[in-house]
Amino acid sequence: MGLHFYNPLTPFFKGEIARLQKKITKETVLEDLNQLMIIRKEKLDKIRQMGFNPYPHEFNQTHQSTEIKNNFDQLEEKVVSSAGRMMSVRLMGKAAFCHIQDQQGRIQIYLRKDQIGEDVFQLFKILDIGDYIGITGQVFKTKTGEISIYAKEFQLLSKSLKPLPIVKEKEEDDGAKVVFDQFADKEMRYRQRYVDLVVSPEVKDVFIKRSKIITAIREFLNKNDFLEVETPILQPIYGGAAARPFVTHHNTLDIDLYLRIANELYLKRLIVGGLDRVYEFAKDFRNEGMDRFHNPEFTQVELYAAYKDYRWMMDFVEQIVNHIAQSVLGGAKILFNEHEIDLSPPWRRLTMFDAIKEFSGVDISEMDESALKNTAKKLNIEITPEMGVGKIIDEIFGELVEPNLIQPTFIMDYPIEMSPLAKKHRDNPRLVERFEPIIGGKEVGNAFSELNDPIDQRERFMEQVKLKDRGDLEAQALDEDFLRALEIGMPPTAGLGIGIDRLVMLLTNQPSIRDVIFFPQMRPESK
Image (cartoon, rainbow, N blue to C red; front, side):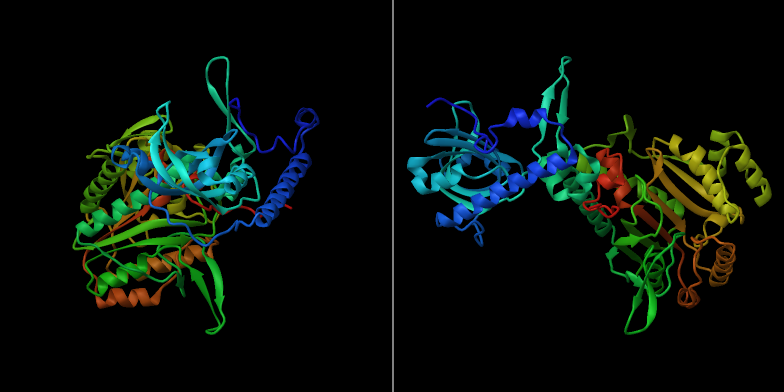
Protein backbone atom coordinates (compact mmCIF):
# COMPACT_ATOMS: atom_id res chain seq x y z
CA MET A 1 0.00 0.00 0.00
CA GLY A 2 1.35 3.45 -0.90
CA LEU A 3 2.82 5.78 1.73
CA HIS A 4 0.46 8.49 2.87
CA PHE A 5 0.12 10.90 5.77
CA TYR A 6 -2.62 10.13 8.20
CA ASN A 7 -4.78 13.00 9.40
CA PRO A 8 -6.98 11.92 12.34
CA LEU A 9 -9.53 14.59 11.41
CA THR A 10 -10.10 13.36 7.84
CA PRO A 11 -12.89 10.88 8.64
CA PHE A 12 -14.81 13.57 10.46
CA PHE A 13 -14.25 16.66 8.32
CA LYS A 14 -14.81 15.73 4.70
CA GLY A 15 -16.28 19.18 4.24
CA GLU A 16 -12.96 20.82 5.17
CA ILE A 17 -12.85 23.16 2.18
CA ALA A 18 -16.37 24.39 2.75
CA ARG A 19 -15.61 24.97 6.42
CA LEU A 20 -12.53 27.05 5.64
CA GLN A 21 -14.46 29.14 3.14
CA LYS A 22 -16.97 30.30 5.72
CA LYS A 23 -16.21 33.32 7.87
CA ILE A 24 -13.98 32.28 10.77
CA THR A 25 -15.02 33.88 14.05
CA LYS A 26 -14.36 33.12 17.68
CA GLU A 27 -17.71 31.34 17.75
CA THR A 28 -16.85 29.09 14.78
CA VAL A 29 -13.49 28.22 16.27
CA LEU A 30 -15.15 27.23 19.55
CA GLU A 31 -17.77 25.26 17.63
CA ASP A 32 -15.06 23.29 15.80
CA LEU A 33 -13.15 22.72 19.04
CA ASN A 34 -16.29 21.41 20.72
CA GLN A 35 -16.87 19.03 17.81
CA LEU A 36 -13.31 17.73 18.07
CA MET A 37 -13.72 17.15 21.78
CA ILE A 38 -16.97 15.27 21.19
CA ILE A 39 -15.15 13.05 18.71
CA ARG A 40 -12.31 12.41 21.13
CA LYS A 41 -14.73 11.51 23.91
CA GLU A 42 -16.38 9.05 21.56
CA LYS A 43 -12.95 7.54 20.90
CA LEU A 44 -12.39 7.32 24.66
CA ASP A 45 -15.59 5.29 24.99
CA LYS A 46 -14.52 3.05 22.13
CA ILE A 47 -11.10 2.45 23.71
CA ARG A 48 -12.80 1.27 26.89
CA GLN A 49 -15.15 -0.92 24.87
CA MET A 50 -12.10 -2.50 23.22
CA GLY A 51 -10.91 -3.52 26.68
CA PHE A 52 -8.06 -1.02 27.09
CA ASN A 53 -7.52 1.23 30.09
CA PRO A 54 -6.99 4.78 28.73
CA TYR A 55 -5.50 5.99 32.03
CA PRO A 56 -3.22 3.29 33.53
CA HIS A 57 -1.41 3.89 36.79
CA GLU A 58 2.24 3.66 35.73
CA PHE A 59 4.77 2.86 33.03
CA ASN A 60 8.35 1.68 33.54
CA GLN A 61 10.32 4.18 31.44
CA THR A 62 14.00 3.24 31.15
CA HIS A 63 15.29 5.83 28.66
CA GLN A 64 14.39 9.27 27.33
CA SER A 65 14.78 10.48 23.75
CA THR A 66 18.06 12.40 23.90
CA GLU A 67 19.62 9.74 26.08
CA ILE A 68 18.86 7.15 23.39
CA LYS A 69 20.17 9.34 20.56
CA ASN A 70 23.36 10.31 22.38
CA ASN A 71 24.15 6.70 23.26
CA PHE A 72 23.09 4.97 20.05
CA ASP A 73 26.34 3.01 19.68
CA GLN A 74 25.79 1.38 23.07
CA LEU A 75 22.02 0.97 22.71
CA GLU A 76 21.70 -0.22 19.11
CA GLU A 77 19.53 -3.38 19.01
CA LYS A 78 19.09 -3.15 22.79
CA VAL A 79 15.58 -3.11 24.27
CA VAL A 80 14.47 0.14 25.88
CA SER A 81 11.22 1.48 27.24
CA SER A 82 10.32 5.07 26.44
CA ALA A 83 7.23 7.24 26.80
CA GLY A 84 5.93 10.58 25.68
CA ARG A 85 3.25 12.60 23.98
CA MET A 86 2.45 11.61 20.40
CA MET A 87 3.25 14.59 18.13
CA SER A 88 3.01 13.09 14.61
CA VAL A 89 1.56 9.98 12.97
CA ARG A 90 2.23 8.33 9.60
CA LEU A 91 0.26 5.20 8.65
CA MET A 92 1.47 2.69 6.03
CA GLY A 93 -1.15 -0.03 5.94
CA LYS A 94 0.01 -2.66 8.43
CA ALA A 95 2.80 -0.46 9.79
CA ALA A 96 3.16 3.07 11.11
CA PHE A 97 5.65 5.69 12.21
CA CYS A 98 5.06 8.27 14.91
CA HIS A 99 7.11 10.72 16.94
CA ILE A 100 6.78 10.99 20.69
CA GLN A 101 7.95 13.97 22.72
CA ASP A 102 9.33 13.70 26.24
CA GLN A 103 11.11 16.23 28.45
CA GLN A 104 14.35 15.92 26.49
CA GLY A 105 12.99 16.06 22.95
CA ARG A 106 11.50 13.79 20.29
CA ILE A 107 12.22 10.32 18.97
CA GLN A 108 10.65 8.27 16.19
CA ILE A 109 8.72 5.06 16.85
CA TYR A 110 8.14 2.30 14.28
CA LEU A 111 5.18 -0.05 14.77
CA ARG A 112 4.06 -3.15 12.89
CA LYS A 113 0.72 -4.91 13.30
CA ASP A 114 2.29 -8.38 13.25
CA GLN A 115 4.62 -7.34 16.06
CA ILE A 116 2.28 -5.58 18.52
CA GLY A 117 -0.86 -7.53 17.61
CA GLU A 118 -4.10 -6.80 15.76
CA ASP A 119 -6.04 -5.35 18.71
CA VAL A 120 -3.24 -3.07 19.86
CA PHE A 121 -2.62 -1.87 16.30
CA GLN A 122 -6.30 -1.02 15.94
CA LEU A 123 -6.03 0.92 19.19
CA PHE A 124 -3.05 2.84 17.82
CA LYS A 125 -4.94 3.74 14.62
CA ILE A 126 -7.67 5.63 16.50
CA LEU A 127 -5.30 7.61 18.73
CA ASP A 128 -4.79 11.34 18.32
CA ILE A 129 -1.96 13.83 18.36
CA GLY A 130 -1.44 14.73 22.02
CA ASP A 131 -2.10 11.26 23.47
CA TYR A 132 0.56 9.85 25.80
CA ILE A 133 1.91 6.46 24.82
CA GLY A 134 4.56 4.08 26.14
CA ILE A 135 6.56 1.66 24.02
CA THR A 136 9.11 -1.07 24.62
CA GLY A 137 11.33 -2.09 21.73
CA GLN A 138 14.71 -2.25 20.02
CA VAL A 139 16.79 0.78 19.16
CA PHE A 140 17.67 0.94 15.47
CA LYS A 141 18.38 3.37 12.65
CA THR A 142 16.07 3.72 9.63
CA LYS A 143 17.24 3.71 6.01
CA THR A 144 17.20 7.49 6.12
CA GLY A 145 19.49 7.43 9.16
CA GLU A 146 16.98 8.44 11.83
CA ILE A 147 17.48 6.84 15.24
CA SER A 148 14.21 5.13 16.16
CA ILE A 149 12.61 2.48 18.36
CA TYR A 150 11.04 -0.63 16.81
CA ALA A 151 8.07 -1.23 19.11
CA LYS A 152 7.62 -4.73 20.48
CA GLU A 153 5.04 -3.62 23.04
CA PHE A 154 2.73 -0.60 22.97
CA GLN A 155 0.51 0.97 25.61
CA LEU A 156 -1.80 3.98 25.78
CA LEU A 157 -0.90 6.01 28.90
CA SER A 158 -3.30 8.94 28.72
CA LYS A 159 -6.03 9.92 26.26
CA SER A 160 -6.02 13.62 25.36
CA LEU A 161 -9.52 15.07 25.07
CA LYS A 162 -8.61 18.55 23.82
CA PRO A 163 -6.58 19.01 20.59
CA LEU A 164 -3.18 20.65 20.74
CA PRO A 165 -2.65 23.83 18.73
CA ILE A 166 0.07 22.23 16.61
CA VAL A 167 2.46 24.85 15.27
CA LYS A 168 2.40 25.24 11.50
CA GLU A 169 4.97 26.88 9.25
CA LYS A 170 4.89 28.36 5.80
CA GLU A 171 7.75 29.65 3.70
CA GLU A 172 7.51 33.10 2.12
CA ASP A 173 8.85 33.92 -1.35
CA ASP A 174 12.04 35.29 0.18
CA GLY A 175 12.65 31.99 2.00
CA ALA A 176 11.68 33.28 5.43
CA LYS A 177 9.70 30.88 7.60
CA VAL A 178 6.57 32.20 9.23
CA VAL A 179 4.93 30.39 12.13
CA PHE A 180 1.15 30.65 12.21
CA ASP A 181 -1.43 29.04 14.43
CA GLN A 182 -4.10 29.94 16.94
CA PHE A 183 -1.58 29.63 19.78
CA ALA A 184 0.55 32.55 18.64
CA ASP A 185 -1.64 34.66 20.95
CA LYS A 186 0.73 35.72 23.75
CA GLU A 187 -2.00 36.03 26.34
CA MET A 188 -3.27 32.54 25.64
CA ARG A 189 0.28 31.20 25.86
CA TYR A 190 0.74 32.73 29.31
CA ARG A 191 -2.63 31.47 30.53
CA GLN A 192 -2.10 27.97 29.17
CA ARG A 193 1.61 27.52 29.83
CA TYR A 194 1.09 23.77 29.97
CA VAL A 195 0.19 23.88 26.28
CA ASP A 196 2.89 26.43 25.44
CA LEU A 197 5.53 24.08 26.81
CA VAL A 198 4.26 21.21 24.66
CA VAL A 199 4.15 23.01 21.31
CA SER A 200 7.07 25.43 21.76
CA PRO A 201 10.38 23.69 22.59
CA GLU A 202 12.20 27.04 22.83
CA VAL A 203 9.91 28.01 25.73
CA LYS A 204 10.85 24.88 27.63
CA ASP A 205 14.53 25.70 27.03
CA VAL A 206 14.12 29.10 28.72
CA PHE A 207 12.78 27.49 31.88
CA ILE A 208 15.43 24.81 31.89
CA LYS A 209 18.02 27.61 31.76
CA ARG A 210 16.19 29.39 34.59
CA SER A 211 16.60 26.32 36.78
CA LYS A 212 20.29 26.07 35.88
CA ILE A 213 20.81 29.78 36.68
CA ILE A 214 19.35 29.31 40.16
CA THR A 215 21.48 26.20 40.67
CA ALA A 216 24.62 28.10 39.59
CA ILE A 217 23.90 30.91 42.06
CA ARG A 218 23.31 28.44 44.88
CA GLU A 219 26.53 26.56 44.11
CA PHE A 220 28.56 29.79 44.00
CA LEU A 221 27.18 31.06 47.31
CA ASN A 222 27.64 27.72 49.05
CA LYS A 223 31.23 27.58 47.81
CA ASN A 224 31.78 31.03 49.34
CA ASP A 225 30.58 29.91 52.78
CA PHE A 226 27.06 31.36 52.64
CA LEU A 227 24.32 29.56 54.56
CA GLU A 228 20.92 29.14 52.89
CA VAL A 229 18.09 30.08 55.26
CA GLU A 230 14.33 30.66 55.28
CA THR A 231 12.45 33.67 56.64
CA PRO A 232 8.72 34.46 57.00
CA ILE A 233 6.53 35.19 53.98
CA LEU A 234 3.65 36.36 56.20
CA GLN A 235 4.94 39.35 58.18
CA PRO A 236 3.28 41.53 60.83
CA ILE A 237 5.20 44.55 59.50
CA TYR A 238 6.32 44.73 55.88
CA GLY A 239 9.71 46.26 55.14
CA GLY A 240 12.99 46.06 53.29
CA ALA A 241 11.84 47.87 50.16
CA ALA A 242 9.72 50.75 48.88
CA ALA A 243 6.51 49.05 47.76
CA ARG A 244 2.83 48.58 48.55
CA PRO A 245 2.08 45.25 50.23
CA PHE A 246 -0.69 42.70 49.86
CA VAL A 247 -2.75 42.44 53.04
CA THR A 248 -4.37 39.31 54.48
CA HIS A 249 -5.97 38.46 57.82
CA HIS A 250 -5.14 35.76 60.35
CA ASN A 251 -8.36 34.62 61.95
CA THR A 252 -6.97 32.96 65.08
CA LEU A 253 -4.76 35.91 66.04
CA ASP A 254 -7.30 38.39 64.65
CA ILE A 255 -4.56 40.51 63.08
CA ASP A 256 -3.70 41.71 59.59
CA LEU A 257 -0.56 40.24 58.07
CA TYR A 258 1.36 41.23 54.95
CA LEU A 259 2.89 39.17 52.18
CA ARG A 260 6.54 40.12 52.30
CA ILE A 261 7.83 42.73 49.88
CA ALA A 262 11.41 41.75 50.77
CA ASN A 263 13.23 39.50 53.22
CA GLU A 264 15.99 42.00 54.04
CA LEU A 265 15.08 42.87 57.63
CA TYR A 266 14.80 39.24 58.69
CA LEU A 267 18.10 38.27 57.08
CA LYS A 268 19.82 41.14 58.89
CA ARG A 269 18.32 39.87 62.15
CA LEU A 270 20.26 36.65 61.44
CA ILE A 271 23.47 38.64 60.97
CA VAL A 272 22.78 40.13 64.41
CA GLY A 273 22.39 36.58 65.69
CA GLY A 274 25.90 35.65 64.56
CA LEU A 275 25.27 33.96 61.18
CA ASP A 276 27.93 35.86 59.24
CA ARG A 277 26.92 34.91 55.68
CA VAL A 278 23.32 34.11 54.80
CA TYR A 279 21.18 33.98 51.68
CA GLU A 280 17.61 33.12 50.70
CA PHE A 281 15.79 32.57 47.43
CA ALA A 282 12.54 34.37 48.16
CA LYS A 283 9.14 34.73 46.60
CA ASP A 284 8.24 38.37 47.19
CA PHE A 285 4.94 40.16 46.56
CA ARG A 286 4.35 43.81 45.67
CA ASN A 287 0.94 45.30 45.09
CA GLU A 288 1.99 47.50 42.21
CA GLY A 289 1.59 47.95 38.46
CA MET A 290 2.16 45.17 35.96
CA ASP A 291 4.31 45.60 32.88
CA ARG A 292 7.02 43.71 31.04
CA PHE A 293 9.42 44.20 33.95
CA HIS A 294 7.00 43.79 36.87
CA ASN A 295 4.88 40.90 38.12
CA PRO A 296 3.16 41.17 41.53
CA GLU A 297 4.77 37.86 42.55
CA PHE A 298 8.47 37.60 41.73
CA THR A 299 11.65 35.82 42.81
CA GLN A 300 14.86 37.27 44.13
CA VAL A 301 17.89 36.07 46.00
CA GLU A 302 19.10 38.21 48.91
CA LEU A 303 22.45 37.69 50.59
CA TYR A 304 24.34 39.35 53.43
CA ALA A 305 28.01 39.17 54.37
CA ALA A 306 29.26 40.44 57.74
CA TYR A 307 32.44 42.58 57.89
CA LYS A 308 32.15 43.58 54.20
CA ASP A 309 31.06 46.78 52.45
CA TYR A 310 29.49 47.73 49.11
CA ARG A 311 32.86 47.92 47.35
CA TRP A 312 33.53 44.27 48.20
CA MET A 313 30.00 43.44 47.06
CA MET A 314 30.59 45.05 43.64
CA ASP A 315 33.50 42.71 43.04
CA PHE A 316 31.38 39.81 44.26
CA VAL A 317 28.53 40.67 41.87
CA GLU A 318 30.95 40.70 38.93
CA GLN A 319 32.19 37.28 39.94
CA ILE A 320 28.78 35.69 40.49
CA VAL A 321 27.21 36.97 37.24
CA ASN A 322 30.28 35.92 35.24
CA HIS A 323 30.13 32.50 36.93
CA ILE A 324 26.46 32.08 35.98
CA ALA A 325 27.08 33.03 32.35
CA GLN A 326 30.04 30.67 32.05
CA SER A 327 28.22 27.79 33.77
CA VAL A 328 24.88 28.07 31.98
CA LEU A 329 25.72 29.70 28.64
CA GLY A 330 29.35 28.71 28.20
CA GLY A 331 30.69 32.25 27.91
CA ALA A 332 30.47 35.83 29.15
CA LYS A 333 29.10 37.38 25.95
CA ILE A 334 25.33 37.40 25.50
CA LEU A 335 22.81 38.83 23.06
CA PHE A 336 20.01 40.92 24.53
CA ASN A 337 17.59 43.06 22.51
CA GLU A 338 20.01 42.94 19.56
CA HIS A 339 22.85 44.23 21.75
CA GLU A 340 25.96 42.15 22.34
CA ILE A 341 26.77 42.47 26.03
CA ASP A 342 30.02 41.41 27.65
CA LEU A 343 29.56 40.34 31.28
CA SER A 344 33.30 39.90 31.90
CA PRO A 345 34.75 41.89 34.83
CA PRO A 346 35.52 44.68 35.46
CA TRP A 347 32.30 46.65 34.96
CA ARG A 348 32.02 50.42 34.66
CA ARG A 349 31.36 52.28 37.92
CA LEU A 350 29.50 55.58 37.84
CA THR A 351 27.90 57.68 40.58
CA MET A 352 24.20 58.44 40.25
CA PHE A 353 24.70 62.21 40.03
CA ASP A 354 27.45 61.83 37.42
CA ALA A 355 25.23 59.48 35.40
CA ILE A 356 22.33 61.96 35.44
CA LYS A 357 24.67 64.77 34.40
CA GLU A 358 26.13 62.64 31.59
CA PHE A 359 22.78 61.79 30.03
CA SER A 360 20.73 64.92 30.84
CA GLY A 361 23.36 67.63 30.87
CA VAL A 362 22.06 68.82 34.26
CA ASP A 363 23.89 68.70 37.60
CA ILE A 364 21.27 68.03 40.29
CA SER A 365 23.69 67.15 43.08
CA GLU A 366 23.03 70.36 45.09
CA MET A 367 19.32 70.82 44.34
CA ASP A 368 16.62 70.87 47.01
CA GLU A 369 13.11 69.48 46.52
CA SER A 370 11.72 72.64 44.90
CA ALA A 371 14.60 72.91 42.42
CA LEU A 372 14.32 69.20 41.62
CA LYS A 373 10.60 69.56 40.83
CA ASN A 374 11.29 72.47 38.47
CA THR A 375 14.12 70.55 36.81
CA ALA A 376 11.93 67.47 36.36
CA LYS A 377 9.28 69.59 34.62
CA LYS A 378 11.91 71.12 32.31
CA LEU A 379 13.12 67.62 31.46
CA ASN A 380 9.51 66.51 30.78
CA ILE A 381 9.61 64.03 33.66
CA GLU A 382 6.16 63.37 35.11
CA ILE A 383 6.02 63.79 38.89
CA THR A 384 3.24 63.93 41.49
CA PRO A 385 2.81 66.21 44.53
CA GLU A 386 3.54 63.55 47.17
CA MET A 387 6.96 62.75 45.70
CA GLY A 388 9.92 63.69 47.86
CA VAL A 389 13.54 64.25 46.85
CA GLY A 390 14.35 60.56 46.51
CA LYS A 391 11.37 59.73 44.29
CA ILE A 392 12.00 62.71 41.99
CA ILE A 393 15.66 61.77 41.49
CA ASP A 394 14.63 58.18 40.88
CA GLU A 395 12.15 59.28 38.18
CA ILE A 396 14.78 61.43 36.43
CA PHE A 397 17.28 58.59 36.53
CA GLY A 398 14.78 56.00 35.33
CA GLU A 399 13.66 58.10 32.36
CA LEU A 400 16.92 59.59 31.13
CA VAL A 401 19.75 57.34 32.29
CA GLU A 402 18.80 53.72 32.89
CA PRO A 403 17.67 52.82 29.32
CA ASN A 404 21.08 53.97 28.00
CA LEU A 405 23.15 51.69 30.23
CA ILE A 406 23.46 48.62 28.02
CA GLN A 407 26.88 47.27 29.03
CA PRO A 408 27.19 46.20 32.70
CA THR A 409 27.43 49.29 34.90
CA PHE A 410 27.40 49.87 38.64
CA ILE A 411 25.43 53.02 39.50
CA MET A 412 26.63 53.97 42.97
CA ASP A 413 26.45 56.56 45.75
CA TYR A 414 22.74 57.37 45.94
CA PRO A 415 21.15 60.35 47.72
CA ILE A 416 20.31 59.51 51.31
CA GLU A 417 16.60 60.19 50.73
CA MET A 418 16.40 57.22 48.33
CA SER A 419 17.84 54.61 50.66
CA PRO A 420 16.56 54.45 54.25
CA LEU A 421 18.35 51.14 54.96
CA ALA A 422 21.80 51.99 53.57
CA LYS A 423 24.79 53.32 55.47
CA LYS A 424 25.84 56.96 55.03
CA HIS A 425 28.71 57.43 52.62
CA ARG A 426 32.04 57.61 54.44
CA ASP A 427 33.05 60.70 52.40
CA ASN A 428 29.71 62.50 51.95
CA PRO A 429 26.92 62.22 54.56
CA ARG A 430 24.31 63.41 51.99
CA LEU A 431 24.84 60.16 50.14
CA VAL A 432 24.67 56.47 51.01
CA GLU A 433 26.89 53.55 50.04
CA ARG A 434 24.52 51.87 47.63
CA PHE A 435 24.81 50.53 44.11
CA GLU A 436 22.63 48.94 41.49
CA PRO A 437 24.04 46.71 38.73
CA ILE A 438 22.38 47.78 35.47
CA ILE A 439 22.63 45.62 32.36
CA GLY A 440 20.71 45.89 29.10
CA GLY A 441 19.03 49.12 30.22
CA LYS A 442 17.48 47.76 33.43
CA GLU A 443 18.64 47.20 37.00
CA VAL A 444 18.99 43.57 37.99
CA GLY A 445 19.90 44.08 41.62
CA ASN A 446 20.38 46.40 44.57
CA ALA A 447 23.11 46.48 47.21
CA PHE A 448 24.21 48.48 50.26
CA SER A 449 26.77 48.91 52.91
CA GLU A 450 24.05 48.11 55.43
CA LEU A 451 23.01 50.68 58.01
CA ASN A 452 23.84 49.28 61.44
CA ASP A 453 23.51 52.45 63.57
CA PRO A 454 20.16 51.99 65.40
CA ILE A 455 19.78 55.71 66.15
CA ASP A 456 20.37 56.71 62.53
CA GLN A 457 18.03 53.91 61.39
CA ARG A 458 15.24 55.16 63.65
CA GLU A 459 15.60 58.67 62.22
CA ARG A 460 15.44 57.30 58.68
CA PHE A 461 12.31 55.33 59.52
CA MET A 462 10.70 58.47 60.92
CA GLU A 463 11.40 60.27 57.64
CA GLN A 464 9.63 57.41 55.87
CA VAL A 465 6.64 57.84 58.21
CA LYS A 466 6.45 61.52 57.17
CA LEU A 467 6.47 60.52 53.51
CA LYS A 468 3.68 58.04 54.16
CA ASP A 469 1.69 60.82 55.83
CA ARG A 470 2.16 62.89 52.66
CA GLY A 471 0.52 60.11 50.65
CA ASP A 472 3.52 58.02 49.57
CA LEU A 473 2.01 54.53 49.70
CA GLU A 474 5.41 52.92 49.06
CA ALA A 475 7.19 54.52 52.03
CA GLN A 476 8.63 52.03 54.51
CA ALA A 477 7.00 51.20 57.81
CA LEU A 478 8.54 51.65 61.26
CA ASP A 479 9.72 48.27 62.56
CA GLU A 480 10.45 48.43 66.29
CA ASP A 481 11.64 44.82 66.52
CA PHE A 482 14.19 45.39 63.77
CA LEU A 483 15.43 48.49 65.62
CA ARG A 484 15.70 46.37 68.76
CA ALA A 485 17.85 43.89 66.83
CA LEU A 486 20.16 46.69 65.70
CA GLU A 487 20.40 47.86 69.32
CA ILE A 488 21.69 44.40 70.23
CA GLY A 489 24.42 45.13 67.68
CA MET A 490 25.06 44.27 64.03
CA PRO A 491 28.59 44.17 62.57
CA PRO A 492 29.51 46.05 59.38
CA THR A 493 27.63 44.19 56.65
CA ALA A 494 27.22 44.23 52.89
CA GLY A 495 23.85 43.18 51.44
CA LEU A 496 22.65 42.36 47.95
CA GLY A 497 19.39 41.49 46.25
CA ILE A 498 19.30 40.10 42.70
CA GLY A 499 16.04 39.87 40.76
CA ILE A 500 16.01 36.30 39.41
CA ASP A 501 13.28 37.00 36.85
CA ARG A 502 15.11 39.96 35.33
CA LEU A 503 18.41 38.10 35.36
CA VAL A 504 16.80 35.21 33.49
CA MET A 505 15.27 37.66 31.00
CA LEU A 506 18.73 39.03 30.35
CA LEU A 507 20.54 35.71 30.03
CA THR A 508 17.86 34.12 27.80
CA ASN A 509 17.11 37.25 25.73
CA GLN A 510 13.42 37.43 26.64
CA PRO A 511 11.47 40.69 26.20
CA SER A 512 9.02 40.28 29.09
CA ILE A 513 9.05 39.01 32.64
CA ARG A 514 6.02 36.90 31.68
CA ASP A 515 8.29 34.92 29.36
CA VAL A 516 10.41 33.70 32.29
CA ILE A 517 7.68 33.01 34.87
CA PHE A 518 5.81 29.74 34.38
CA PHE A 519 2.46 31.17 35.49
CA PRO A 520 2.49 34.99 35.42
CA GLN A 521 -0.36 36.92 36.99
CA MET A 522 -3.14 37.67 34.48
CA ARG A 523 -6.47 39.43 34.46
CA PRO A 524 -9.36 37.00 34.99
CA GLU A 525 -10.46 35.31 31.78
CA SER A 526 -13.58 36.74 30.24
CA LYS A 527 -16.34 34.20 29.70
